[in-house]
Length: 139
Image (cartoon, rainbow, N blue to C red; front, side, top):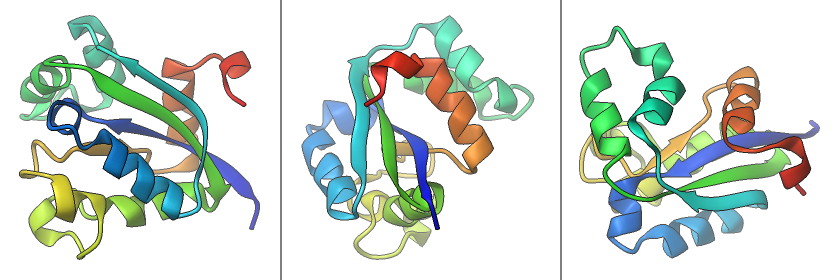
């Protein structure tokens, strides 16, 4: 295996609840190196652009509203098999189905307010990383 990069967002619900530090600690404990990190707040246009892949889905407008309601923390993460590894740390999208000890099992309220986003493939990670970070910003 080789070292790979992935992208993650600590969503507004977790930031507002003061859970970002614990989530970051879980990610680092799983062997990830943080190579980029920033707190920001998405505009409606930015959220619409980032989630454009879901534009035709019934949850799209609610997702955009949720992702613009408060600050988020965007992260560029690195380790071997990073995409798969982060998805294991995050747990299932629906926290009711997430394994014990995962971020979503521990912190997520429900499937819509599930506290964290992570890229689903290396190709997606590359696009998502570029949406939030310039190459020169990543260590």
